[in-house]
Each structure stands twice: as structure tokens, then as C-alpha cells.
Length: 107
Image (cartoon, rainbow, N blue to C red; front, side, top):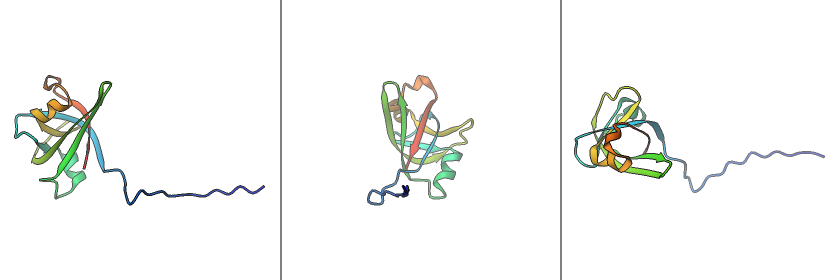
């Protein structure tokens, strides 16, 4: 008996998962719907990062929470922080009293 192994590549109309980066989000008082990109996010997006709209997602035991934000500012964002959200966008992910939340950013 001969076994035949085929490698199959499946594409769905050219669809591929969006690029993503994982880390931590913080918040500050800024323009609602806008955010500051940290160094790792700016590197991932390249030189045209400013003005890009990204999706920030937080998954918890109670569900998936997300906010769409426009990157119009930058931050030094130390210690694994990826993005600094405006307080209203952060509140869509969790209470601002948390200070920091683990997130994934896609674009």
C-alpha cells in the first residue's frame, strides 16, 4: 500500500489574518477616539503609522471588548505598553481604575 501525502494551501479569496501585536494598554486624557502609539506599535506599522485606525481588543472571562482608535500621538510607553488610549476608549475595554490592561492591536 502506498501512502500519498498532499500539502494543500487554502486561501479564502485572498483573505489572511490581520497583522497583530500584543502587549499592554494604558490611558491618558486625550481626544476621544484617538491614541498614542508606543515604540513597538510604531515599528510594526512603519513610517506611515500616524493617522492609521487600529482595533484594540481585550479578552476577558466575560467576553471580548474592543475600541477603534486613530493613532495621532506617540508615547515612550515603557514596560511592554503598546498603546496609550484616551480615557473613553480605555473605558470600552475596562474600568480606567485598572490603569493597565492586556490587549491585542490589529490593523
